[in-house]
Amino acid sequence: MSCASNLVDSFGRTISYLRISVTDRCDLRCRYCMAEEMTFLPKAKLLSLEEIAIIAERFIARGVTKIRLSGGEPLVRRDVIELTRRLGRHVGAGLDELTMTTNATRLADHAEDLVDAGVRRINVSLDSRDPDIFRHITRHGDVTQVINGIFAGKRAGLAIKINMVALKGLNEDEIAPMLDWCAAHGFDLSLIETMPLGAIDEDRADRFLPLTAVFDSLSARFDLSRDDHRSGGPARYWRVGGSTARLGLISPLTNNFCDGCNRVRLTTEGKLYMCLGQNDQVDLKAVLHAEGVAGLDAALDEAMRLKPARHDFQIERGSAPAVARHMSVTGG
Image (tube, rainbow, N blue to C red; front, top):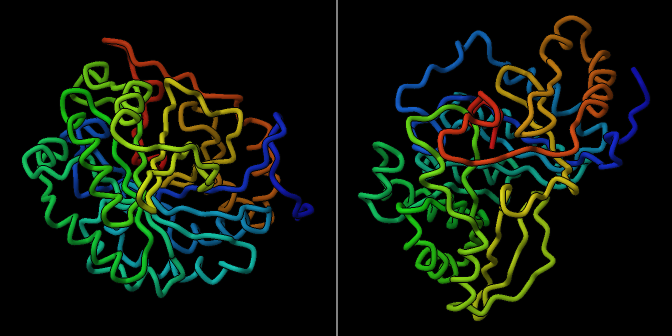
């Protein structure tokens, strides 16, 4: 096995953050993310939880200090808490933080288990608190179930950050009220521009809302001051005056953040993508099956060589997605 040096790509960026999609399945069908009729991977093609743990532990040995479990919806996968417990044992022993992104539909049942496993902070995807708009965006979701999950997480001791995709003509009037709500309850809010990943049933150009305009509008209503807080991801943060809340902006189209990229993504079928918006990948499942753990280091070194400089996201009417795979496959 090669020397366990830190992972540094050919542009000098140190890779310290691994996002893992534990399943491509989700119990919602958000319009900007999925088609209404989705074909998910056969379960036989997925990494086993043991394989995920082995690969993740090799990343930790190579200097990764933050891991986020995602999907799809990670809490729909059976025994995901056992994986969380295993990875949580590395927190404080190589790993600084283990987090999760969830839609919170099942969070009420799992919040205490996540805390027991070593998770201290989660991101919750919530694009609207209006029941009808939420149901429209998700196609069938119950926002009350989600909000109950969020507050169950808060009671269990989890720090909550709300992720809200800004959607023109759908939720743009809810952004300021969402920030008010988050500030009142001690939640951070990150706003996200919609990204051209995977084929959906609508034209994303119709819903694209640039965060430059959103921020100008929020600045007129809130006292926002720049905050140098870093969560390990691409968000730029502002402190919301009169509260403990932060506002984060994730703007892959209007403010490319690739120069400081520290992330790679492991898909549910074991492929490592070095960029969310490119197709360069290394099949770690195939390497693990053919060569065992001993083969992973050389594969990770090859991944660093292949990691591209940046994504090339564009959203124009009638344009094809940047990549064919959906976000749920790559992991959010």
